[in-house]
Amino acid sequence: MNDTARENDRKTWMSLLAKAPSGRLAALWSEAGYAPEHSFLRTPEQGAVMVQGRTGATGAPFNLGEMTVTRCAAKLADGTVGHGYVQGRDKAKAVTAALIDALMQTDQAPEVRAAILTPLAHEAQRAAEVKAAKAAATKVEFFTLVRGED
Amino acid sequence: MYVAVKGGERAIDNAHALLAEKRRGDTSVVELSVAQIREQLSLAVNRVMAEGSLFDPDLAALAIKQAQGDLIEAIFLIRAYRTTLPRFGSSRPIETGQMACTRRVSATFKDAPGGQVLGPTFDYTHRLLDFKLMADGEVPEAETAPPRTEPTPHIMDFLNTEGLIEEEEAHDDTPPDLTRVPLELPAERPLRLQSLTRGDEGFILGMAYSTQRGYARNHAFVGELRTGTVPVEMEIPELGFAIEIGEIEVSECETVNQFKGSKTEPPQFTRGYGLIFGQSERKAISMALVDRALRWKELGEDDVGAPAQNEEFVLYHADNIQATGFLEHIKLPHYVDFQAELELVRKMRAEAQTGLQEAAE
Image (spheres, rainbow over the protein chains, first blue to last red):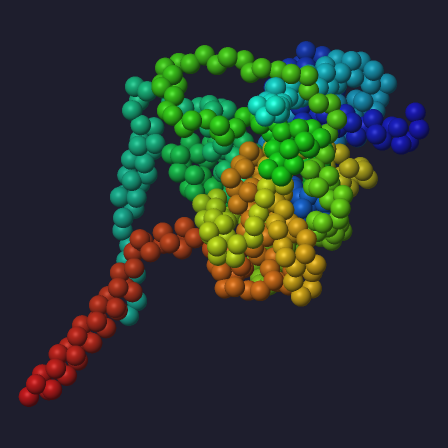
């Protein structure tokens, strides 16, 4: 894997962890039974990120409002550093995300991916599909009335 | 002379205890949970997030519970809370063209690619009270249909093949932030949009309605109205790349406004824009109409003196927390001020009576 592919892969799993439902991530994490020894480079911290939009969807940026985010940086015993940036105010979720990010950079990556990331990705995709399918059922099918002129 | 008075501490404590009891209501009725509010009063939650200017459905639901359903009080609680949060940074501008739409309609283009998707809307309901909801109602599962897999394109892109619609100029300047620097006039469009999106729904609606009734009428069509979720991306300095830090629901309204041209611009369709946290299309449409009205100067239109064109009037009165803070403070003790006024009126009265007597003599 080259650097760009590695970066994209990491970006994908970090994004997945950020959006994962707290309860579901906690359940998968405890089922997998990982408890890596670690220290904190940054203890879990709640904060806000200013979300920007664009005028007319494509023009100049403007500030839409903030969202809550919790972040954390953890270091494994072997020195691997993991970062967690997750939506909301759940500190435990940020710690779990940072530890998973760290483990994914070690040789345990395949098992972590199979136990946690793959199920999360499937569930997220499934939820998005159900939502899209319900919206699709409300799509208007126009039909033209036949005029009784001839 | 200024007289400081003390007292009322016990009365205040007891008032707070009474408030807590009133909030809980009849204890033989099951207490509301925050999760129930978040899931079942989601449009109230959305309004609190939009005007509280903080996307966090759990906190907004808690605020609604604490405020006994007084949404402006709930917004106040959220505004106060957000000031305690350190800011980690700013996101990249969200890409609403990539939105996973749950609703998307256009009043101008029937056959737009992606179609007219009604979504969970009150439109076409008969506004008759549904007494079934007074009983425990089982909700039938919503229907499904094969979903669209690709993003739904913005309708504006299709409408503009003839170049008859004003173009948005894209750039990446850092936008001004009225939560960091007090609002100053004249305000550029990004600052106006920030003010409008967190402004009071009722006020923005009233202003928008005034343009429809003829006070700076701007002939708006809803080019597109969409609600759905978008990912939020942020550059993470310690990583050196951007990740998605979450996903938010937003409503977006783009209006196309008939425009006969001005000294500086040719006849074309001009644009108004609304973007709001959550599903809140009344506010999104209102915001787009007011945005368009406030753009009179940059489009070379005449100032017809309408309230919606007056950015000082609109922007300085849109914030319901500023408004309610100043308004409600007048119920707090003003004993000294009033004493002074009383003295003054007595004196004027006495002088006026003396004047009358002298004139009569």
